[in-house]
Image 1: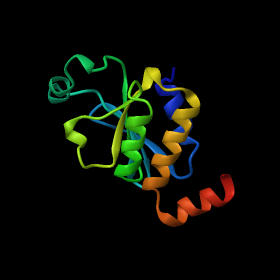
Image 2: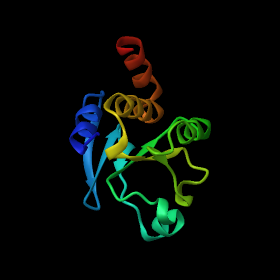
Image 3: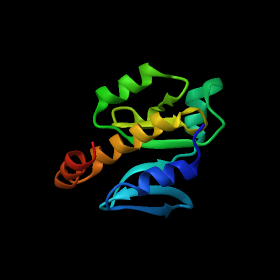
Length: 129
């Protein structure tokens, strides 16, 4: 089970990342582009999800493209989900209390790579992976 402290630790270990509150919610940014964020469900989300709506903490994360989003949704629907608000948008929602730390690490790094400037991402990949 992951926590917000785990998200913070993983995200802030990535180059040129900062944490910034927005509307009293946490978000992590690379070069002023958000890549993961705290995303509580809104009334429209709850209505759309019905009985499947999670009640724990929810993390939003950018993904590289819609194919990656669909792969995550198919891989583990008990962890990854979406709402109509994110239809057609390369981002996924994550039940933070159900994701393992290794998967969380991979998700955050992939989100960072999707949003970081190309040169910064290439330097990270060349030196870290």
